[in-house]
Length: 172
Image (cartoon, rainbow, N blue to C red; front, side):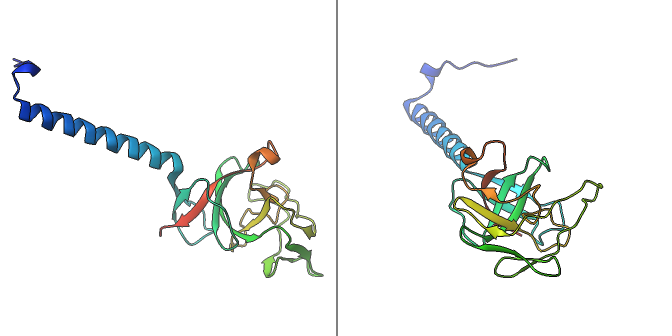
């Protein structure tokens, strides 16, 4: 059996309380919606970085040493890497085939784990509007390979290429 109490029979005190609870709830919904539009949680399921959980902050400017989350067309899943090269930095291949950008990045592999051929990024200067991303794991899929390449900071500048999701802040 359901008991229905008409709203007009509830005292003014309870009406105000109900109104404030609804207003507070609506405020939390609006706040939560605003936060989830500008942030989200990402989990690193690979061994390329030691951190396993990241908070992704959308719309943040990226600097060298920060982590970035981006979508890659070749890999089909969001990746998280460290920004180690910015506009004006030189990409250099030494006589041993190692790549350098202000520090040794490492030797690129010739094939992925599933046997697909990988192609090394050529030497050159990183242009304005792009970053070189990297992770220290030897099998990390990063800017050492043309399949990732330099990641554009503005997705409209190079349609069909990688799309930055935001700055990735390590949690643990």
